[in-house]
Length: 300
Image 1 (cartoon, rainbow, N blue to C red):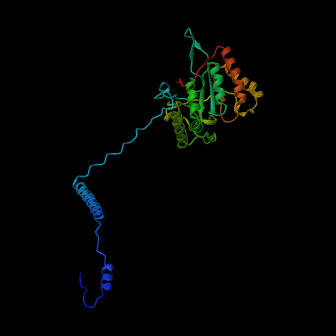
Image 2: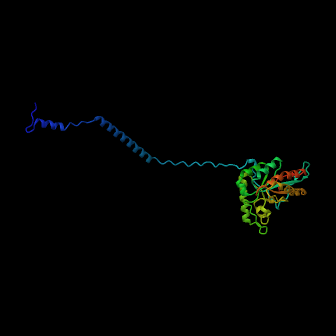
Image 3: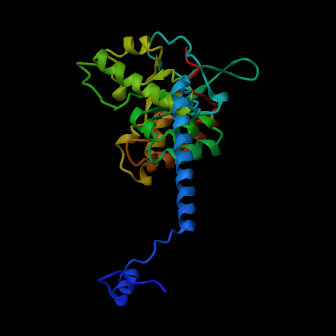
């Protein structure tokens, strides 16, 4: 039996040994911690190696951005394309192109022309012309053409001709005439609108109000033949009422005294119900007198 040191009782010695238990080491937890540290060290080392390699590699040039090809949407079928205009007429055209009969003899011709469109009445005018197998020439306002490109394509697809009637339809005074710089812009803007819609060049020009002072040189410089009319139906001045159709038809019949009349009508600028109603009668009058209906794009 072990002896108790002097001055200490056995109970005191026992209490001292119980207050300081022996230290236990959890080797399982230590192993896990060591493994985690090893993994972390491996990841850090690998990252540092990659960083060094990237710094040593020469920079590769960035590929140039790929540009999407420009999409070209032709405004009209290629069959309608007309690259250039014929040489413009020297003077003011007031007669329809001359036609030839089956035996080669000169045949009377008539050109129906419609100004100020495209407008609300243009589809009805086109319907009447198509139903009767008659072509016409449409002198369009540039602003209207730009707003209604599909209608211009329909005009061309039906075999009709298109002419330039300025962009804004501004009418100068007859005394002052046209200012060359202003008219040049009006013609050019309208020409672009027509070309964008139809894929064709407009080779004809009709000055609004028939004001020709100062216009001839500008039109010729633009390569356009300037066309007026020989018969004015004044359909623009009648009320929008079908009852005035006979009056328009009677005025158009004045051209029956001419060999090659050019008839002035309107499909824009207002309600043209009277014009549309009179159109069948006008066609029948000229057809019954042996006239051939022609467009003005063949003027010379």
